[in-house]
Length: 317
Ligand SMILES: O=C1O[C@H](COP(=O)(O)O)[C@@H](O)[C@H](O)[C@H]1O
Image (cartoon, rainbow, N blue to C red; front, side, top):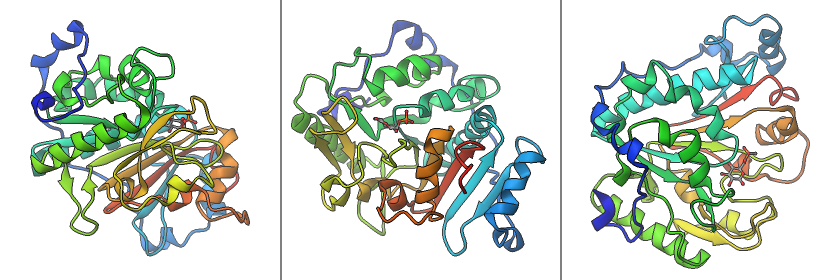
């Protein structure tokens, strides 16, 4: 569908995926969110943490809404429980947006996030999500060929996209034949065409594209997308998509959404697991004395930001 509109050519998925295209179903029940009462909001992180030792249940995880903000933290005993919750959260948002606007625009990151999405490609979601309405984008991508081991597209294809029947024309990979600058410009042009067609919504508040859901990860250094601590790209205010040629994490050349676009998303989900990220989680969620501002601290969302943490990642809170 989008190939005639976008400079970026939507990817060509494997023929096995094409054979799945007829199997899309109706959407699931409306979103059920783990809202918490004002009393619970006032609970300290220490008391939330005690739930790890005596979990209520995997699904009724420790959850807290930051006072006065549209930011929630959901904590789970294990990474497996994070994956189970993330699948339901994403499926519920898919149903909500398909019902409201007839499309669901989802932005993926690379890294550990893709493995955390594995439950979404299993029963019951594999058959109940209306995959035909999904439009998939990348919050960042490495400037490598799509079949390269470092490609975020390849990671998502192997780990998730090849297992669900999203129409190939609705999966927007970056053009891997271009330079970093060219690929960033090309991707921004692609997004502008889709905004014109109202496939991607526009934020009334910021004027930037308003994706329905971004599924994000954070590095141990507190970076998200390809926005690294102390890098000037963190402060980009005008571009939608930009490139970095000196990424401290290899490979050095990448393209990335900018903060104005990331923070204009309706829903942002930050998924973090493992002890190696506990310190950055602590800083990002404002519980440490660390003087440096990490990119993850700057994350917000128009409607709601949720941090999904396992016990290890939350261990310093
Ligand atoms: O380089 C990247 O790293 C981040 C974090 O990855 P993780 O494996 O530590 O979760 C990822 O979100 C980003 O998309 C990727 O390009």
